Amino acid sequence: MAQRKPAPPEPHVHGPGCNHDHEHHPPAEPYRRESPKPGRNDPCFCGSGRKYKKCHGASN
Figure (cartoon, rainbow, N blue to C red):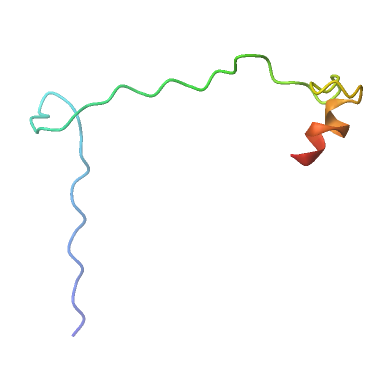
């Protein structure tokens, strides 16, 4: 005779009835670049005089 699997636990819901002891962390801050991302047709940042897509952008 096949055994039945136990029912999955109820999903955890935070609300007025949330009375257990765990930390509620604020959402993480999104990553922000210090300088704008170079475009494919912009000059390469290394100073070679080539376009970014043909220099350092080609390795990506």
